[in-house]
Image 1: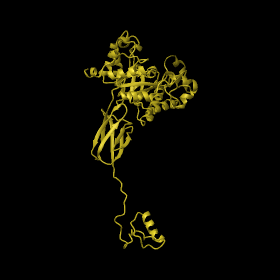
Image 2: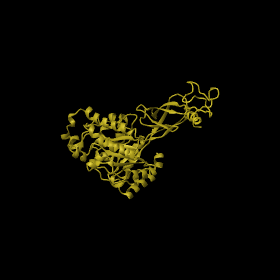
Image 3: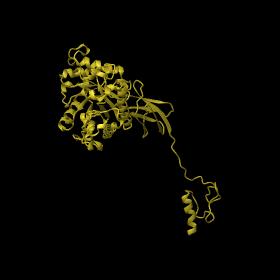
Image 4: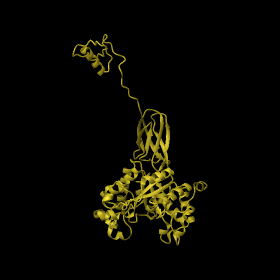
Amino acid sequence: MRRALIPWLVCLLLFAACSADSGLPEGGSAPAGNDSNGEGGEPDNEAPTTTTTPTIQLIGRVLNTVGVPIAGATVSISGTTTRTAPDGFFSVSAPGAGVVTAEKAGWVSGELAWDGSSHLVEIALEPITVRALRVSANAAGDPDHFQRLLDLADETAVNALVFDTKTEGGIVLYDTSVELAHEMGAVNATYDPVALIAEAKAHGLYTITRIVSFDDAIKGANYPEHAIAGRWIDPRITEAWAYNLDLAAEACQLGFDEIQLDYVRFPSGQAVKISGQLDMSQEERVGAVAAYLAAARALLHPLGCSVSADIFAIVVSADNDQGIGQTPEDLSSQLDALSPMIYPSHYSNGWLGFPDPNEHPYDVTADAIDDTLERIEPSTVVRPWLQSFWWTPAQIRRSIQAAEDRGVGWMLWNIVSDYSRESLPTDAELEGG
């Protein structure tokens, strides 16, 4: 009986159908190449086979509406996902025809019905026109204040919020997992970003976080070898980038749609006298800042976040970097969005022939945006910071109108997030022109 079971066990292990008496000699095996069923050595046509579902290679490209490639977009079909390369191309295996979707933070999602053919497919995406309010630390930490901002967004054309996670001087406003921030005493946990992001998303809002980069008194005090002048970190020191980039990556993983890098420059004011930056070439200054932004883009695009940066408005209208390492051409090539800070109250008297530029919100705003549009990379969105202080609601609306007339978004800056309902247009008003 024991001998009769042995052939059955052998056959089961080989996944073959055998009879109780296989006819194999004890300790022997079937002749090579003969799939015996124990009945005359004929092939067993019912033996199980392994099959592989065939796939088709889909090759395509994601572009913006003027044909410029979009890097870092997520492309999906039939449950398979990939990301676009710097030239906008992607390749993915699919079981057959289906709907291809392309998504990227800061862009309206696009889709295309693919018929399964081998020709190159292209999907065009449109940028989201961001109309945002800045959320200061005090507003983020005050539930009533934050609710007022959400209410303003519900009632107006505002569709985005810009939070601070690292501020001027180096304070980190949430309980970060980046240990260096705690070691340096930089953390002042003011709000829970995950909770506020969820609230903003519930209101359909795009979320941006602002990370101040090289104005960092705390880092400068703890790492004086990274400082170029007092509180200012030297943008040329690549080792000094890691801290900001770690915070940026964490912010992306917390759920922010976009990381906005501020103070991406060499110092201005009195610090220039000791920084030595004016002894550098413009190429060295601009190259250092552009390389930092390129590193941020390479890190954050695969994580699904868009990358933007703020620059002085004066540099878009000047023929040099003003000694701070910012030119719109070089910086915009590394970014999804570039934001000149257009605050007419900061312009010198006589700008554009106006004795007081602050009294001409439309003209000054329009001139700076026009200059930016002429010099920015076509793949990069222009989204200015606009002044929301020292003006009447009517003046704020005039500045907003200059941006709207040029088809670009805008963000309103107020140091304590104090915005009046009268200063904000509604969707209906913008649609009506």
